[in-house]
Every structure is written in structure tokens, then in C-alpha cells.
Amino acid sequence: MGTVNLEMGVLRLRYLQEPNYVRTVLAFVHARLDEFRENPIWIYQENWSSILAQSEALLLKIERDAGALVGMPLFGMPCAVKDNIDVAGMPTTAACPSFAYTAESDAFCVAKLRAAGALILGKTNMDQFATGLVGSRSPYGSVRNAFNPDFISGGSSSGSALAVALGQAVFALGTDTAGSGRVPAGFNNIVGLKPTRGLVSTAGVVPACRSLDCVSVFALTCQDADSVLEVIQGPDERDAYSRLRPAAYQSLQDEHGDFRFGVPGGAHLDFADNAEYALGFQAACARLESLGGRRIEIDFSIFADTAKMLYQGPWLAERQAAFGDFLADHPGQVLPVLEKIMAPADSLKAVDAFRSFYKLEAYRAACREKFRHIDILVVPTTPTHYSLAEIDADPLATNTRLGTYTNFVNLLDLSALAVPAAMTSRGLPFGITLIAPAFAEKKLLSLGDRFHRATGLTLGVGRHCLLGLQEDIPDGTDRLVPKPPVTDSPFSSRDAGRVLPREGVQIAVAGLHMRGQPLNVELTDLGAKFIREARTAGRYKLYAMEWQGRKFPGLVKQIGSSGMVTVEIWEFLPEGAGRFLQKVREPLGLGTLELEDGSSVKGFLIEAYAAAQGKDITEWGGWVEYLESLSRTRK
Image 1 (cartoon, rainbow, N blue to C red):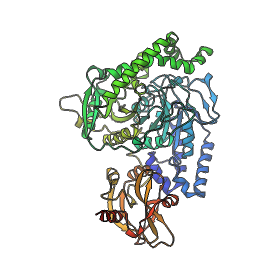
Image 2 (cartoon, one colour):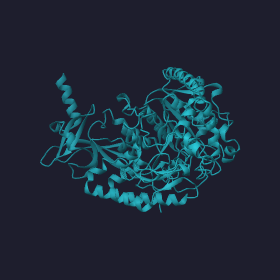
Image 3 (cartoon, rainbow, N blue to C red):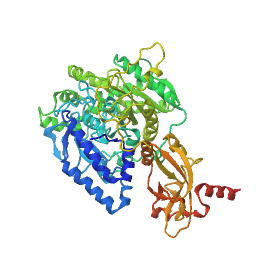
Image 4 (tube, one colour):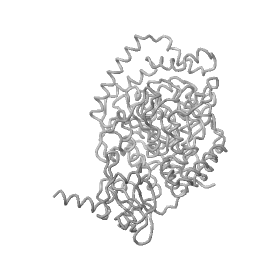
């Protein structure tokens, strides 16, 4: 069959136009599941007839209530769930067969996915008990890298990352305690979002270190990751560590101006003798500077010292609290490398724990001081990329080194985003991680999206370009050499066949996105072009709204109204339209506007219940005209 673009924004636009397209998407995903069946990505896959039945139930719901589609932001999105997160009716193994149980109910985050219309395909492979950054610590088999099977996939959320990279899922849930939601993203050319601790409830998640555990998101783009986070975050009384994002962090914080980014200085910038990773990081920093960033070298010792505490302090005992009893009761049922890792936990004392807690609080205070001088911290996602043979030869030291730039993040209560940055001459991905204080996910996703798009990389596995690193690296230094892709996979979101024609998608705007208005930059940043000004047919009303502290206009089609309202028509490429629609939130929804000249165009209408709370401003003929009338009144 042909290719399908699995970017959520593009799919969302297609579904709004043609909900039945979900059948085509599922057929494509099913073919991808079969194509890579030799790679042990999945521990459990849902019966395919059940998935089809779920999709048909969603379509029936849309048929009965067309407005239901707007209220399901993840409608028809096939997704994967790491096998330490409960999905009702599916086994949870944490990659340990003797630990397995069938979940009676969904984890909090999974229940939110279902309510948003997502289709859960099954449970993915992982490093046993989420202990490892390699992806090869599983009795179900070593998950192999998406680009070269001789190299590791990264862990512990290995299967979830591969499912997204290979086009088997639109997005996936992982977990992240020491870097498990970032390392596999960096090794497989996808985005990995590690939210602030507690922002996403861990109720229904098998704990590793309960005080540090986070549910993470794997996606093809930063916009996709943001869409999933918007769904799964929220307070949960079942999780004592659950937290709400403060109001000041609720909106997308654009990094369109100057920003300061810190990088490790001196000996702390370690690449394990991987010269291409060093060049890739140099090029990534240059790209950030081209986006308005100012590079600042910082003393990285606080972060490095904190990282060491994760496996040399009381948090090892916390892992013992999580599954130590199971280890004791099931000798020989856990991988030997895990038994070796856990062995020192028995010798830890309470006094050692308190000394570590005091030290960590001092590190957190020093970390806050660092972020007074920088807006974000930028690091390589990992120092290098090991082969499976290298991991087998020295499983503990190699795993420890992979956590150099990840282990400290949860201990210091930071948020982080792994973003693809380059492809090496060996055809393997290189990625960077953007790190900021707690609740700064929106800021990271905004900047990460601009950086990712500037790289020119394809999404996941496809025909890869090298980002033009040659132009970014000063003359006289070694350069990364382009190499043909490892695989000529048909799945490529940017250069293979599209689900939509390349001609533009026209959308009408009537308020804050019009020229001269504060949100117009959202259109121009997505490459949209102004086409013309127009007026609606005489059957609309325009209301001045205030919703959740924000003032904006809303159009309502109303029988018997004779009002004509000024709108602007903008044209997007399909992917740009999809990204734009991902920003749309209640009470707005996409509909069809009839125009004065008899034509029609897609545009935004407001829910009637919200309009009832607004002020009718139809008599002014448009939002801009209404604002001008207010200005004249003030004078």
C-alpha cells in the first residue's frame, strides 16, 4: 500500500475532513507491525479485530454527533504504551514474566488517552523493571536500533521509541526516571518529552523510584508531543506526587526573541571519544545561535555530582522498596545484571539517606542559581552510541555513561526535551536535550520545534538528509560525511507520498490571527500566506468573548441573522494547517463558513454555550472594526 504521513497535525486535519480515513491509517500501521515483527518491540499486541471494533465505535459516535470529533483531540491516533503502565484487560509485565498480572483498570494517563479518542495497540518491550538505558535488558529480547540492528535502541522505554520511529504508532507513552524517555528518542530520531515530576499522574504505573518517576511521551514532532501532554496531564487524587502546572506556565511560551543557553564547559563535555557526536553538538549549538540564542559555558559539576547520586545514594534503596520483595521471593527470575545493580541497596542506612537528602537540597539551590543566568541548559542526549556487542562486554559501565546528561534531571526537579539534531556518517541519529526548570515544558517545546524544523531531518525512519552540518562547522575542522541511508524504508513523513495533496489548505480567521493582531505570528511562522479579505454570508453573528482569562471574538452561524462579518483567508501547506489546528482549544471548533460571494471555506466557529456568555458585536462588521470603535470611545 502507499505511505501515510503519521504527523498528528496532518492526521487531525484529514480526520476533520474525512473521519473514515482512520481505516486507511490503521491498515498502514498494521502493515508496519508485520514488516518489523522480527524486532521484539512489543510484549503484547491487542487483537487486531478488537482495535478495528474500537475504531468503528468511534466512527459511529462521530456519525451520531458530529461535534464529538472536536472534543476528541486524539481521535483515531494509534498509540503504544510501555509495559510498566496498566492498560485494562492487558498484561503488565515490566519485562519480567513471573511478575506479570492482568490490569483491571487503566492507568490515569491511559484513561485520558481513551477519552480523547486514541486507539491503544498494545504494550511495548522495555528494560526489566525500567532499570537501564540500553534497551537490551529484557527476557523478551533486545530491542534493536531503528537504523542499524547492531546498535542499541536505548532504554528503558525501548519498544515505545521504536514503535514511533518505525511508523507502528503515531505516539507512545514511556516512563523516565533516569533518562528512559530521552535516550531512546535520541538514538532513533524522534522527540522524547520528559515532563515535570507529578505533572502526569503515575497512578497505575509500576514504580521504579516512585519519588522520581515520570510518564514520558514519544512523538515525531514537538507539536505532537505537546498535543499528547495536553491530554494526559492533570491532577489525580490517587497519586500523592501529582502536581498542577501553575497558571503562569499554562500558555505556549514562544522563544522567538533572544535567549541564553548554557552548555557544559571544560572536561564535563564528554563524548566518549566519539568525534562525530562532538561535531554534531558543535553544529547544534551553532544552529541555536542562529535562532537567537546566546551560548554561555557553565560549570557543570553540580549536575554531574547530582547524576552520581541516583545509583550511589538512597534512590537505589527506593528501587529496592519498589520491587525488592519480588526479587527476594523469586530468586533467579530477574536478570542477573539487575540483581548486581540492586545488591548494594541492602547496605544503605537511614543516616546515609538523610545525608544525601541534605546534599541534594544544596544542589537544587545551586541549580536554581544557575538558571538565573541561563534560560535553558543544552546537552548531548548521550555522550555516544554503543553497539550491542559493546554493551554485552561491559553492561554496567556503558549504561552508567549513557546517563551522563540524563540522570540528574528528575533529582533536580527539571523538565527536559530530547530533539533530533543530526545523522552521523554511519547513518545513526545524534540528538540534543533541552533542559529547563519545572513546568517549563511549553517553552522547551516551542524552541525545540523551531530547532527541529531547522535541521531538515526526516521524521523517524526514512530517507535522511544530514542537516547541512558542513555549513555550520568552521573551516579546518573534520566534517561529517553524508552517507546513503541504512534503509530505504517507505515511511518518511517529509519526503515520501503524502496523505494530502501538496496544494494549499485555506482557512478563514476572524480575530486574533488576522493581520496586525497578536496571534498573526502563529500563521506566518507556519508558512501561511495571506490570500484575501472576504465577508461571510449574511447569516452569522460575531461575539466578543472572554474565556479562561483571554479576550477574543467568536463566530456563530445563526438562522435569521443578517450579519456579515469580515474575515481573512490564509493558505497553508497541509502540514502547516495540521500544526495550526493542534493549537485550537475549546470552545472553538473547525467548521465551514459560507461567504458573501457564494463560496465556502474552512474556518472557526464557537460553541453556542460559550457564545451565550459573550457580547454581540455583529453591528460593527468585524473584530478589527470593533476594536477601533473601542479606541474611539476611549478618546
